[in-house]
Image 1 (spheres, one colour):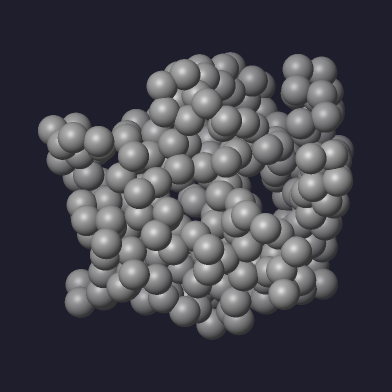
Image 2 (spheres, one colour; image 1 turned 30 degrees about the vertical axis):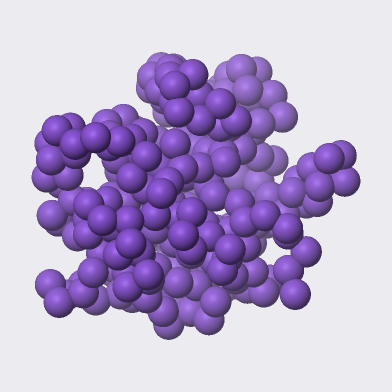
Length: 265
């Protein structure tokens, strides 16, 4: 029986593509189920990489997150088992790319996802939302539904500049829709410690965000890059590689922080 009294909803977000956002969502979800947590992964990215990354084959006959955003009651028929025990998925679809325009004309457009999640959240310990690499209405829906946000960041020169736009969006959502929203943590991805620029950017990010930056970093690793093409999280594709061990370490660090928060409440 889970010790967590309230399911936690986490958006995994960065408007910059190619930073390991989906890889982090998929592998953190997989690491959490490996320690007996019940996890729902919601693929809110039109590219659908989180869906294929857990081996899910999309079909026009199945409900998906696009249907859920138009009718929250469809969430019940949009949750699918994956090949990974205790990990369930609400898949994405290319139709989602048109949702930005369609939702713009509808009422309560920012709270569609929240209303849907409210109906099923008690079945899970954690709900992870893989956001699109943009700060539009889909990401606002995720932030409105979430308790907190995990931000994967590549150690690049422009990382901090892009982060300021993300923080601005978070503050806007806090002010209007979700006053309790917070940054859960920042995880540094594709880290190459031989690169002096990597070390400098890492130092700058820690100087700016302090303890919000996870100690665990995700190294640049070939096995992590290969795994999605086989429809598997790297933790299943190669559990002993450095990338897998890093994601297990990230999950442990995350759960340790959760325990601390529970004690302090």
